[in-house]
Image 1 (cartoon, one colour):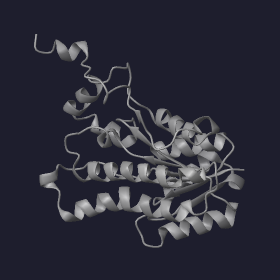
Image 2 (image 1 turned 45 degrees about the horizontal axis):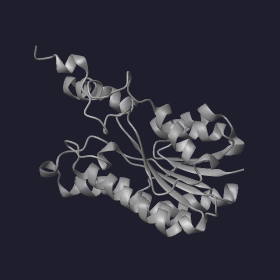
Image 3 (image 1 turned 90 degrees about the vertical axis):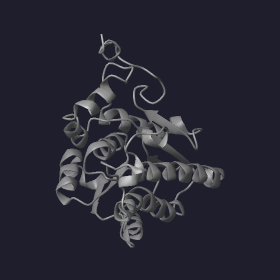
Image 4 (image 1 turned 30 degrees about the vertical axis):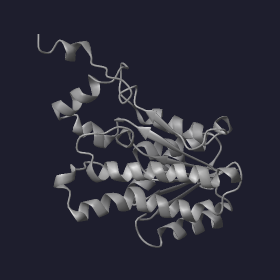
Length: 254
């Protein structure tokens, strides 16, 4: 039985990924800070034999070893790591103070770096790491600031790991979601400008759902992706790779 560690597993993309990988026969180690969200994960999966939840702040010094030790004691191996935990609502460079910078880098670059460092020494050929980045790590985006810096750094880290550990049969890849309809994003749709930028610039008739991202992560944690290494798969309906504008947007000034 293969074992997957997933950070930020209590909600959104992490929760959906945990459910999919469990359905694929894996044992899941779901990591998160919010005990109530982890309780929901336990309810959703409802399989105590193949689920371990850990309420851990991934930014603390002892977090990686706590996660690795608990996983090995419970399941005896680690096959996959999904670094998914993250935060949003960044500010542009000139509005970002040092505390905010450190906070974003701590959660979305330092924490996955340290966890991957402790996990990878226990991985065997056929294992894989998936780092969840963002379209803001692929193209420039307004208000990216520390968020863009963290996600861009995580992309470069992933490419290094693909080169360094690929010869051992350990793959490393990124999944870069565009705007995905989590609870946090739905609140932002109250902003008319934000809503139009997503809807009017996406050349597909809907926006992303957590299942879209989770299924891509699940693919990268499968035999079918065995020769994919050091890549970023963007899941955004074409938002970042085209200059699409909806007919409504084009005709708005008429």
